[in-house]
Length: 429
Image (cartoon, rainbow, N blue to C red; front, side, top):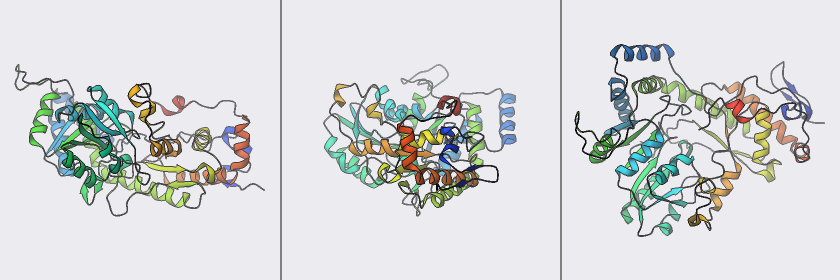
C-alpha cells in the first residue's frame, strides 16, 4: 500500500495518480517562488515616493540615495558605500576601479553575472573549482592557477555562506593580487563575527528584486579604501568632478531616488524578513531531516545569517530520483524550485565554446550543478506551506521507484504542464 500524503482537510494525495504531473490537482493554488519580492511597509514606501516627487529630485545622488548609502555603510561597518544601478554594474565598477586586468580567478558555480562582469571589462576569467563542503571557491586550488597575467581574485559568498576569507586574503597578499568579493547573497551575514562587506579590497551587494533586501533593482560597493571609493564615485557618474568638468573615464551607474526609497523601506523591515527566512529554514530542517537522499545545506550556527536561500543536495542513488526529475514533479505542483547554479558558468556561452576552456575540468562544480535545488522561501512562504511541501517530498521519495518508472516511460496525464516562464512572472535571477 502506498503511503498517503495529507495536506489539510481538502488536499489528500492518496496515490501516485494524485500527483499533478500525472493528472491530479496541484498542491498549491498559487506558485511558490524562490525569490518573490519583499516590499516592507507600503505606506512608508509611498510616502517616500511622494516626497521624491515633491522635491522633484529623481536621480543624481539625491537625499534618499545618500541616506541609503549611509545606512548600508553603518550596518556593514565600513567607511564607504557607493550605491549603483545594479549589482552586476557594481562588480564591473569595483573590478575596474581596483585596476584588475588580464586574468582574474573566479568560481564557475555562481550566477552568470559574476563572471560576465569580469569578461565585459575585457578580463579573462580563470575558473577555479569549489569545495564540496560549502560550495565556495576552493583556496587550495587557486595557487596552481596563478600566472604572470593574474591580477585578482573574485570570490563569491554563495547563498550567504561566507568564503574562507582568511585563506583568500593570505593568498592575495602572498601574490600581490586584488581581492574582490561578490556578496550579492550575503547582506546581513557575518564571517568570524564580522559583517561580510568588510573584507578584501571591496565587496559588492545586490539589491535586486529577488534579494531579501531589495531596491527594486540596485547594487552597492562597500569598502574601507578611500581612494577606491573616490574613484568609483567618479566612474559611476561619467567622471564628473564639477558641473561641467570631467576628469575621469566613467559611465552612468547611479541608483535612482525611487530605488533608494525602496531600499530604505526594505532595510526597515530587515529583522522581519530575516525572522521569516529563519523560521522557514528551520521548518525545512525539521521536514527534510528524515528524507532519504535529500541533504539540507546548513547555515553556520555561530554566525549571523540572512537565511535567504534554502538549498538541498539530491543524491539520486539514495533518493531514487535525480534532481531534474524532482524539479519537474515540484513544478507541476506549483513549487518553483530552481537549479542554482546549473550548469555552471563554464558550460554557458561564451565560455563553453572558448578554446581556452576546452580542456577545463571542474569535477566538484559539475557534481554540485547536477544535484542542487533551491526551494521556495521568503516572506510570502509560510512554515505551514513548507510542512506541506516536505510531506510532498516524502511521498515522492517513498514512491520514487514507481514514479521514476512512469517518468522514464513518458507517462503523463496532465492536460497542461505550465512552463517555467508562465509560472515565474519574471522572477528569474
